[in-house]
Length: 72
Image (cartoon, rainbow, N blue to C red; front, side, top):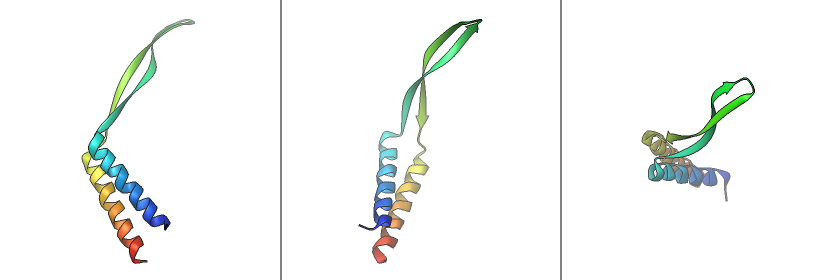
């Protein structure tokens, strides 16, 4: 299989996943207070949104790479 075909398919899959999931969240531990050697921390959940435009661009770019790869 040609490498351009594989790259195009991966880009299409990532774009479709971005349209389907629309974002993800993760937890991180942050220091909320520090007094001398005593430190207090808390788990904070952060949300990351995937822009819909980026997902569409990935799908179009992946399709273009697949089409160009098929012609060669």
